[in-house]
Amino acid sequence: MSNYILDSTSCSFQFEVEKSTLASKMDPNPTNFPILSYVMSKVPSFKRAVGISTDEYDVEKQQSSSLEPHFDLTEKMPHLKNPKIIAAMRLAVANVAQSRSVLKTLGERPDHESVDNAKAKVAEIEAKLSEQLDEIILSPKEEVCDGKRSMEREREREKKMYKAVISLDEMHETYENMLRQAEDRLQKIYEVAVVGSDIVEMEEEKVEVIEEVNEEVVAILKEAEANHGIQRVDLSERRLSLLPEAFGNIKSLLVLDLSNNQLKVIPDSIAGLENLEELNLSTNLLETLPDSLGLLFKLKILDVSRNELIALPDSICHCRSLVELNAGFNKLTYLPTNIGYELKNLRKLWVPLNKIRNIPTSIGEIKRLQHLDVHFNELRGIPPSVGKLTNLEILDLSGNFSDLSELPSTIGDLTNLKELNLSNNQIHELPDTFGRLENLIKLNVYQNPLVIPPKEIVDQGVEVIKRYMLKRRLNIHLEEDRMGMLEIDDEANGSLLTRSTSWLSNVAASVSVTVSAYLGPVGALGNSNADTYLNQQR
Image (cartoon, rainbow, N blue to C red; front, side, top):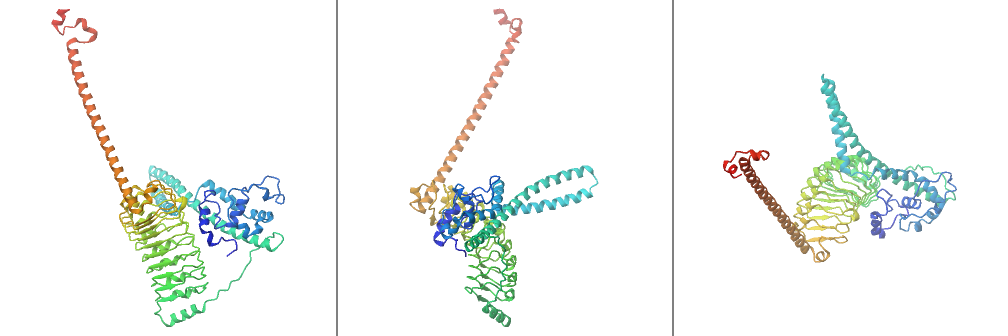
C-alpha cells in the first residue's frame, strides 16, 4: 500500500478523527482519504476571485482551516508542503468540492432500508398505474375515467417522492466513488511531482496483468476430475490472486478455505459448489461478492471478514442454512434489508469495524440469534424490533461514539442476555426496562455520559445496576398509579359537583316555577289575582 497510510498504532486516533464533530459527515474521512482530506482542508474555499489566474493563486496565502487533519501526513509526504503541488491537486478535486456542496444542501444519505422500501413502493405504484391505464382504456364512462385519472396523478406525485429518495442515495454513491478516484489521482500527482521538477499531464498507464494459476490449485482440479469425493480444500496463505472458474465443478466439496490470500474476485461459478457448508474468504482484497453466492443453499458458515467489501449482496439472504456470518473489518455501510426475514437459522452475526449506520428492522425476525456484534460502526440507533431476539446471549454495541445516544425500551425484553457491551457511546440513560435483564452477568458502560444510573451505582457492578433500575421502574409505576388514582378522584369529584349543580338547578327551577305561580309575571304584579289573601293584605 502507499506510504501515506497511517500505521496500526494510530487506530484509536483514527476513530477519534472519524467521529470528530469538526468535519461534516460528507467531508472526506482522513483515515480513508488522507491526501484528499489534507488538500481540501488546506484550501477550504474552492471559489476563486474573478481575474486571478492559476499562476497568481498562492494557496499558502489562504487562511489555514480549523478542519485540517491533525496527523503526520506531511512528515511522511514532505512534498505536500510545496504550494505548486497543492495548487495542482486543488484543480484535481474541484469536482469533489462542488459535489460535496450540492449534497450538503440536499441532506445526508438515506439508510439502505429506506431506499429498498422506496424502490418497492415505486414498483408497486407503477403496477397500479398500469392497471389504471388499462381500466381507463376499457371503461366507457367519462366520470369513471376522470376518477381514475385523478388517482393516477396522485400516484405519480407519490412516485416522484420515492424516486427522490432513490436519486439522493445514488448521488451519495457517486460522490463516494468520486472520493476514491480523487484520492488515487492525487497520489499519482504527488508521485509524479516527486520524480519530476514540473507537474505534467498524466495519462493512464495500461498494464497488462498476466495471472498465473497456482500449481497447487491445478493439482486439486486434476484430483477432483479423477476422484469425485473431495470434501475439504485448504488453500489459505498461498498468495493466490486468482481462483479458476473450473473450481465450481467440485460438487462434492463441503469445506473451502481461501483465507489470507490476494483474491480480488470470486468467480460466479462458485455457485456450482452445491454441497458447500463452510466457506472462508477472510483476509483477501475482495470489494464485492458475486450474486451467485446466494445459490449456496447448504452453506452454514461464511467468513468474509477483513476484505474491502462495501456491501453484502442481497442474494446472501437466500443462503437460508447460514448459522454463522462474519463480515467484520470491511467497509459496509448497511446490511441487506431482508436479512432477518430470510436468514431464520442464523445464530451468530459479526459485523464489527464497518461503517454501518442502521440495523435493518428485520433483525428482530432472527429468533434463533445468540450473538450479535456491531461494535465500532456508526450506528445512530437500535430498532425496537431488537427486543424480539429472546434467545440473544451476547450483544456488543460498543464503539459507535457520538452516533449512538440511546437504547430502545425493548432492550429489556432480551431475557436471555448474558453479556452487553455499551462502552464508548453517548448514552445518557439506560431504559427503565433494564432491570428485567435477569440473566445479565457482564455489562460494560465505560466511556458513556451516564446520568441514569448515577456513577456511584455503576461502580458497584451489574447486579446493583439491575436492582437500581428495577426499583426505579417500580417507583415510576407507583407514581403512574398514584397519578391515575388522582385523576379518577378528580373525575369522581367533578362528577359529584356536576350532579350537585344539576340538583341545585332543578331545585331552583322548581322554586322559580312556584314563585311565578304565586306572583305571576313580574310586569303584572299589581294586577295579579293569583292569591286573594295577598291581595287583601295590600
